[in-house]
Amino acid sequence: MINDWNATLSNLRKGGSAFAKHNPAVVTAYRGLNEALGQAKHLDNKTRELIALAVAVTTRCDGCISSHAAAAQKAGATVEEVSEALGTAVALNAGAAYVYSVRAIEAFEQMDQ
Image (cartoon, rainbow, N blue to C red; front, top):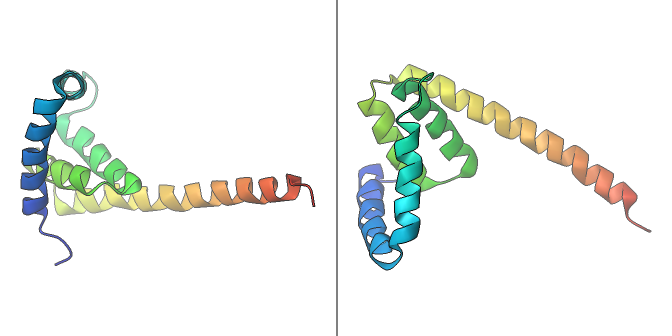
């Protein structure tokens, strides 16, 4: 096992409570963003959580992975659906590396020698 994801989620929630105590305005605003997503009309909760889990992988956020893995499971996602969503994240990261490689070559070639 790489990580204990239940412990990660539990620790995140505890840390979030401490953060809320010290910076309630930011935490309230953040929670408002998440509540607004719950009112979306075109994507169901499972789809949103699959997207969120894939984004969590691309941003390399363990707290996000634990949170959205739990939420995707609660929303009824299957491991096959999660795997397909994560395949998209893998493809996107490879694509992003390609695009930024093109940019890096362009930058290198523009530098004065």
